[in-house]
Image (tube, rainbow, N blue to C red; front, side):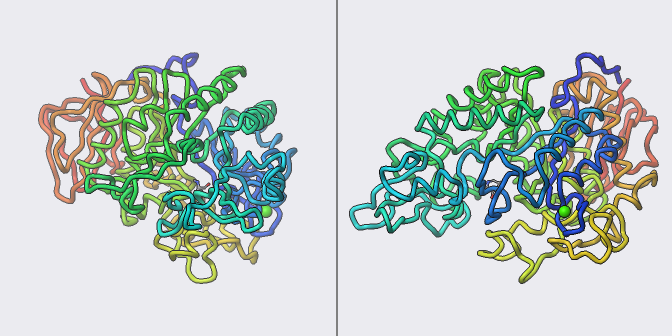
Length: 535
Ligand code: NOJ
Ligand code: CA
């Protein structure tokens, strides 16, 4: 399938990346909470799996109202997770294993306990007042405009500060005030924050809410949704025109890119681009001068359906600028695990979706546990810790996908010491764990690892152009990665055949078919997928 030219391999374009929720990966001091040393202790595993870069959810100081996304100090490590020395060790050890470390930056808002906000709310004339978005009440005393809260569509995005009589903007929790990116001092602060971490060897950032850091300077009302809007937008009853995706946000992204490019090797920007308009999505890549990678939420929110998944991919393929490089993921810490959400924990479907992610043009992003087909963990009652789960219950809450990694099936799950109560419940450690799946040629873990190795070895799979194959319909999705490689997935329960395919199966979701020769007709069983090396 063509040898990879080693010198041309770029870790974030050619590799497979992996998201780690640090509280849930590995606990080294027996307090039931994962930590940075825990991640370091698992780097050999990640190297063995073939991962070339990790993104770690926020590790910075935080009161944890939103589990790290409410930052009280952008340049300090949360003591529960470790120290700056631990981070330096992690970066150095990862580098030795060919793994780059990306952190998570939260520039849209801080915690209300950040020193900037403490000063800002203390009086209207304070030095940091304008670091945040303040506005006078509407004439009726209500919020300044109609913007709704991202966590609670029924609530305003504004909170009244009774002491000063003004409202401040909080698109998330009231304890997460939005920063004011029109103030140049805020821009300068974040330039320093980027450099602080880049200077320590951090390879780049996943940028939280990067589509919405800047708001309309006039704070205009959002217009109502219409019947053609995406269901996710309809949930809010308004189009995010003035609080999201403002044209001027691209100036900020270009500024951040210039800082990243100033380093050797250049640092990498990965955006949480939570937009459901494909044109807006494509724009975040700029002219190869904004984000390197932008998460595609349209694929993540598509159902398990060949037509809809294909449409998400092909729309992006059609709109992305020539230099832009896609990235594909089925899940993260904000959405139920795709093994459960897309696949209902059916092993055949889980393999099919893994093959989809690995077979597309673009960088696959795994969420920790995807490689073993880890399902959601039920989290109920008092165990619910996510603020969204507390407001609306586990279906909308995000605890289910944030539970400890399943390293083995013994007490402690290899995550923490036996007998320690983990910060979140373990879930199905007996049925899905790394130890049991390691070395088993039929396991999901082996499948994932072999797929990663196949990608690494195949220029076509890493770099080849995506082209729809004519056999695609509403149940099967077939595409070419250049002339030599065909990926064929059957999203249906009925067997299917594809004519005029000749070659050898490089890998199949049913491993017994690996190496099978195909002469003219490719048969696919229920929920079966293959990569075919053509001849
Ligand atoms: C997106 C993050 O992924 C999510 O976990 C968080 O709650 C919000 N941004 C607010 O920071
Ligand atoms: Ca710990």
